[in-house]
Amino acid sequence: MQSSTLLRYSRQILLPQIDIDGQQKLLEAAVAIFGLGGLGSPAAMYLAAAGVGRLVLIDFDVVELSNLQRQIIHRTGDLNRPKVDSARDCLGGLNPQVKVETIGHRLDESGLDEIVSAVDVVIDGTDNLESRFAINRACFRQAKPLISGAAIRFEGQISVYHPGIGDSPCYQCLYSDDSTVAQTCAETGVIAPLLGIVGSVQAMEALKVLLRIGTDLTGRLLLLDALSMEWQTMRFRRDPKCCVCA
Image 1: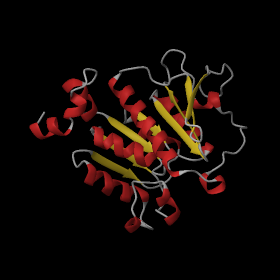
Image 2: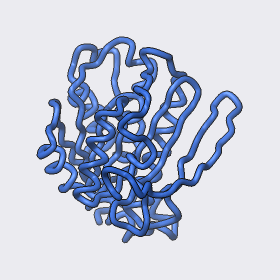
Image 3: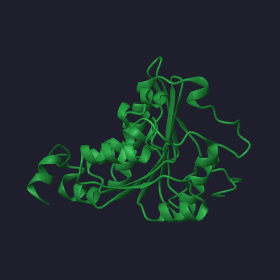
Image 4: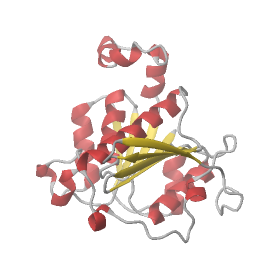
């Protein structure tokens, strides 16, 4: 490892749970981030800063003015640009050592499987159940860990799903196909820093999974009420009738 690399990541390398070997694992790791909005923005930036070697960014939207209140990876000068291009430029400026790949179109089932199979961890920062269910199915088929987050109004939640590991539930165990249509920020609003909190927790969980340290949120749903700044943890199990993982 070069001296400049050692210096860049020196504060992480000092941690006994990481050390040089752990940092090398991160440099060799790959993470796919679906959605470069309020959640994907901080998650991508912290993973790049932490030295995850390859990031695959998936989003088919363009930057709009209303995005800038919370999607901190984009700038005013990026208006009307594809989000993947804006995010790639931001991450390149933050850490040029990270390889950033972009996908700016919708993916079918085979496309999802191809992307998910080629990475170590998947982060879901999308804002609709259809996409979340599809990403969950791909992660289950490819046996790849999924870190899912959501935020609306002043409320956030995060969990980790480990297909094929122990008795881990999947995302669909928590939300059935006939769940009420998910609300979006455009419909109900969201406070800006909440997305940063939830996206940062997603990045933290991704690093823990990659490094195999600590206890991740598998089988637990972490809930945040930002108005009272209170966290709660809800445990849940695999649904024996789940259409994906049962």
